[in-house]
Image (cartoon, rainbow, N blue to C red; front, side):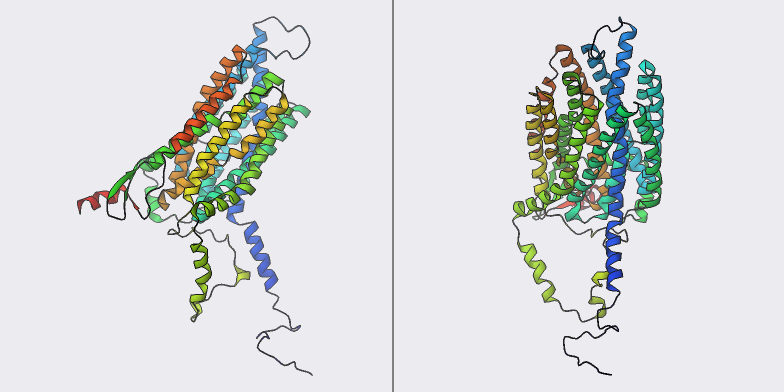
Length: 544
């Protein structure tokens, strides 16, 4: 039996065939499985499923209210006599805009309280059961909408409006808060902004396909079928959340669990949006108002652009006779492009923009030279085998000392996104054909990165233990802005529709976006090498 000679390049351990051990393939498969089915991707899938379910009913709701307003109008007016659409009247369009605005206001008003309650649920139960509570109550709400569509008329409108109160305990804002909070604890600081964008992108893709399916179901079957389908999907989402979402975030400690039950923790998000003291490198203590102006700028930005999807649908319906299918295509294109932009383009823009903004190649050089200066000599110094490494399991919080050096570009990106949004909204007001409305709907998503970028800035300016409250705070600001914009601009659109000039609403939106851009220039990052002083620490440090 011949024995082959060994040299320095021969492996120390060989199998019978003289090849590498067969454990590499199972280890590689385990790594791929851990990446694909890890907690971060399970959260992204939950966001897609929930937004898909919500999107199914968004387009039919506007059409349902138009039909109910049409029925109400002809109960105290002469019957329609002629050809064409009997609901194509200014009075009906204005009434529909008013009722949709009331619905949007009640939804946003409920969402504001939902943020506090759901944030409290997260601290008590963790992300999994907080998510389940939101999906269960949303399923109950959409089941009531089935009855509203069945009754129709004024009774149907009352049912729709009244049962929106369920959103105080369980609603769309709540499940978004759960997912954002869970992701913020699973991702390293340098990747947090990009992952916020990916999460919003997955929800936008879900919304896009929901818009499309909702419009098609309403046309092929009947207007009630989208609501029945949504109820079934909420049941599926509830089961998925109970089985696959993480139970607790990584950096939750016993002290946090105890303190989370206090009533002060219920209103903790409000305390985040305030001025904070920073100790400079020289020892001087200064006050920084960045979080205040950042919140105000985001408020104005959402106030300007939050009504845009509804405005496009209302304007296209009243001026170009768009139905559920056309509006479904419009919202599908808008949300799909936004989702692709946030999933694929936004992380690359953030990464490349930070390199350009910071212009610090020193960190990359240090990363290459550091391994050469350290030679492992003890067993504990050696790294784990790459094949057996599973990057997303177990659920573990990132290093608390890791800093995000790209926050400056994130703030820069938030500002100029509002400029792009204002320009597209301004030119949308000149639309005179249906294809121009489609064009505006397809261009607006390229200014949609301001929300995840703002979340990245907000979480980076807060201590790690306040990240959930920081996300609640920025979501609270967005909810209040949405509440006001749907109410105010809904009434403005109704007034302009009565005048026969609904396009003027676009110009009002663009003006507020520019104002938000100006306010964001008053938000700046804390001075370099400064340290934030907590309220408890500031009292002791000022005494010494």
